[in-house]
Length: 93
Image 1 (cartoon, rainbow, N blue to C red):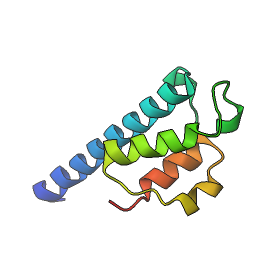
Image 2 (cartoon, one colour; image 1 turned 60 degrees about the horizontal axis):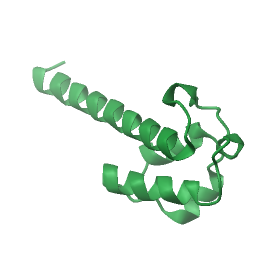
Image 3 (tube, rainbow, N blue to C red; image 1 turned 30 degrees about the horizontal axis):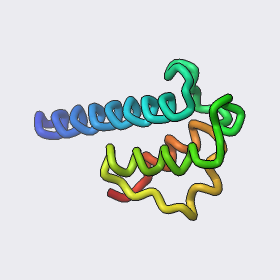
């Protein structure tokens, strides 16, 4: 692998880790849980502080922090933290 390709791959991995940390921090803050309590299979609606506005607040904060667009029509399939993470990973910039 060329040095340029290795650097590009390392940059992409760093960006993904940063994105994951930002997502985890925002969800933990809004849902008022410890970030370590969030696993891919964590059902968002089962979190104590979850209400109808929590997902909207999370989406707004994610769009600002990550400069992505998360279409509301895609939110109906978000049930778990893993679903949300997958949506963010595939979100258009």
